Length: 115
Length: 280
Image (cartoon, rainbow over all chains, first blue to last red; front, side):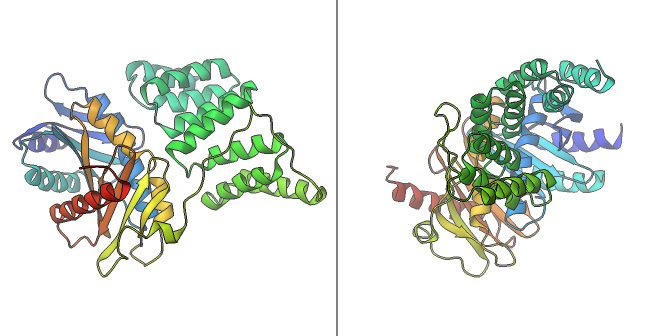
């Protein structure tokens, strides 16, 4: 198993996480993915990249550096994103019952090791 | 068909949900294939109707096609989703200039230059319009055709009104700010880590975030969006939508746990709803 797939596997093992993927932050393309059946990685990548770009501009406007972690919470689940180096962003899709704290720790650890 | 257009077309065919349509549309436009560019960007906009980049590109394409009213509308849409989009401000400035409204042209080009001071094309356009204004000092304002030029989005309100809902930031408290869907500050203030007033700039950048979050949550089956938590080395940001048309940003030092910041933000959102006269 490649290091990237090992990272995705580790994040996806967190209870409640329905899948994870590594995307290109600029153009929203999927680099690698590990998702449950029926989940469209390309849609997640495009939407997450777009939202993160907006938030990056907002944090820059506030005089802050690029976010290290982003959590979009919906009524029935969450999108988690950890921007890394080289324009890569680790993204996870989590259900409402997910252990978000563990997912965050795993993702921050993973994205640091991917760089 | 050139190699880059062929490659971009193949990429878009392979990944229709990607943002490759932007590159392809621009490549086609630059080659003068504006009808093809129009179709590509329209297709992309049907998938990403809130993407300011796409509206901006559509404005350039329509401008190339001579549809100036359409170009104006497209650039106005781009500014609705991203009021800091200098390309759209430049485009609208150009349209005002063509319509003879030098003052409005100057205003838009100056805003574009403030946002993007390194863009030489904006600086040159600004210099050209200023030269025209100097050459015709008595009356440079011609009423634009009603179907061509419409009012541009307004800028933020005054500081006095904007700080009335929330207390001023204290130590570790970088601010709380209520923003409308057009990126205008309704209330509150925001300070950067170096204590600069960055409220209006951040408010403008937040335009469209609520729609983007709503679209993302809906398309990914997450229901309605509830909050966005953003961690940065210099501070934590928490965004909540007190109403569908507004966004509340709370910023604190990164030493404050995010969950606690969420509680503070929820309390501020309740205050905002009361201030807006929206029942709980």
